[in-house]
Image (cartoon, rainbow, N blue to C red; front, side, top):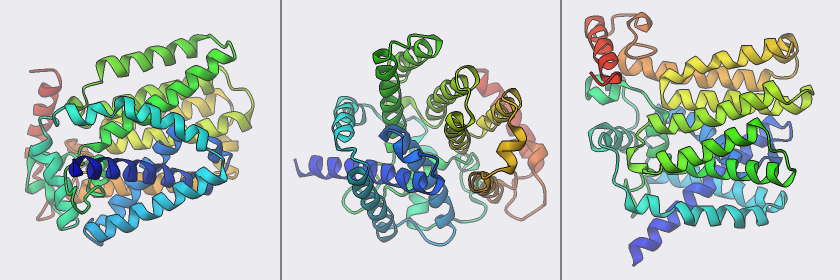
Length: 352
């Protein structure tokens, strides 16, 4: 029985901490971000902690002390902003959703790749910190994902590495909160349009097809984010007319695309959605040159640290794309091997 209480304690501790970091990022970005629901705050916190976990891994292992201090800050932020923003009623609602999907983290097994490299990657960061040339130690270490760095922050006393699969649970949890609030609001306002049906179908699809958390790995977490990305994209493109109204959604779109891409590198392709919006809405110059330096600068730093970490793993900015490999370091993966693995991944993706 004691094990269950410890398990639940850390589940709440980590979840509230991540939402707390979302409030911190919202406070920094301003633009009424603090008014966003707790689901969006969770995604913002996931984004900020992804950056912090990668950055700090270069200087210190993610051991008990580091992780306790990190999540204590997040929990403190959560308590402060929930009280200040009067979100206690909303907190009760999200706890209801939490207990509904909680069974998933108890019942389902870990992903097939979990013991191969998901666990070992995160555990190495917790026990040893980052090391250059990790791609030479394990084939799986060559495919960089910020999800492993987030998981290394869940290494705590008593629970140790038993919550290193929590990331996908939190992604689907925050997604459900965002979609439920959106659907309820649209239904109450009798706004039954294309976006309502797209949101409803996305909500049903994720909870019917992606309900098996043990099958997530890194792919499905990014796919869930992609559905939310397109919901926001269509809302900006088809419905929002005032610059001030869709600026917040544009910020969210950039953050979610970068978060999805940090989990699975192929999602950098969806950055093309940003110039599409800027050009279609005729706000390219206004967005780039007026008061958005903080978001653009932080986004560039986040993108750079992800690509730099991937390079230090393998010698390639994007593995296994041979064109992004440069230099001939002792720890680099040989280009001939990268080329062969690129073909292998292509066959694997086509079930060859």
